Length: 298
Image: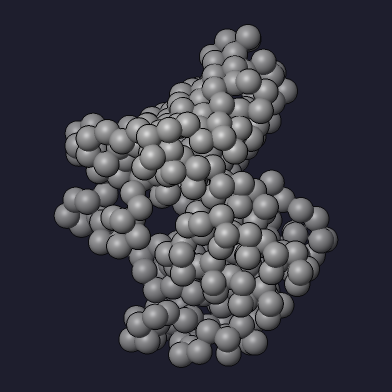
């Protein structure tokens, strides 16, 4: 499959681009970025062609991999879908429900395959955990703590403007929800409060009456970083496996495989744009709850 790459940052070049270039069933044809000089540099790194016009790139490829800020991604995803390109998107799908709806409508209208790269959902150890959890059943609560510290010297994501503006809720929150939702189901009510160091603390009620709580930040003290998720149920306690067993590049390679399968068979995928929109809807409600200091029904 001939891919175009949108984006020129660290994640675009070193994860999306590098994995696509190494994949036996993918070819990186071209690169587009808002800075032409950076696009040329990433294209040279991937032995691809830099494009000044994203629509011209869409016309030359079968699929587009997007590694842009989410508010920028949504608009390009709509244009690429309407051009007939399959989509390998990043999380979150968008920063508003309205923008996510537009992506879903464009994908469904064009009949293209579209996958959102929730990294953990492409790690086999996490997928095995979720399958086992759903087989056991009886879960009534979940707790997650995801405290990262990206604003440190040398961190490739520390200069990200959208992460600084929207924080861990929108950056890490999708990772947490991508694991919680398959076990506890959709969210029907949510509340959230701010804490020190950009922390957002979220409590959600799920469709079956279960409840989950998440504590999320990108600005934890450097010696206080942690990633953990735990489920509690009638049959005991289950700890989500360490996500570092599978690298981001290996996970992204699995995402390419699944996009190829979707495009080849027309089948759906648990991480399609419809799921991506569900996650955006929950994050937007949590953001409203945090800002307005009230519970929000979904």
